[in-house]
Image (tube, rainbow, N blue to C red; front, top):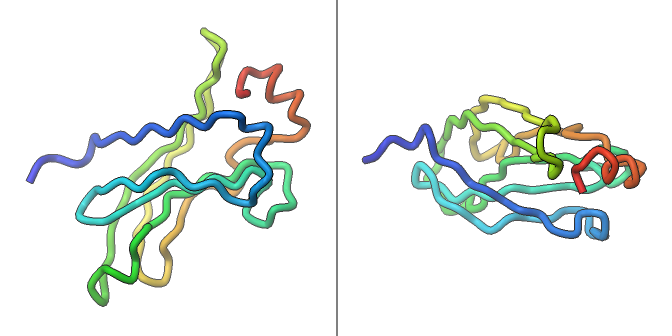
Length: 123
């Protein structure tokens, strides 16, 4: 089996400022014989904060064998659309299992007011 340590999944989110749903999910992708997706919460996991929350999610936990575990070292990068400007990078390592299928960053980036994100180049 090939080396999976350098796998990359890119998710381009369009029209961020027009999102109205609590959570937006990426398409499913497969790594380490497990289906994953990304979850973005435009107003935080509690739907009441001023932060964008980003999570890596095991998409098919019930289809995995009893007692399964997956270790993941992953990072999220929010790319600034203005050339030469700083992007936001966050990294984490985590053991996923049947009781804990989602891990990430509750406060990935401050998103209110939207005008400030546009000025900073993230919209």
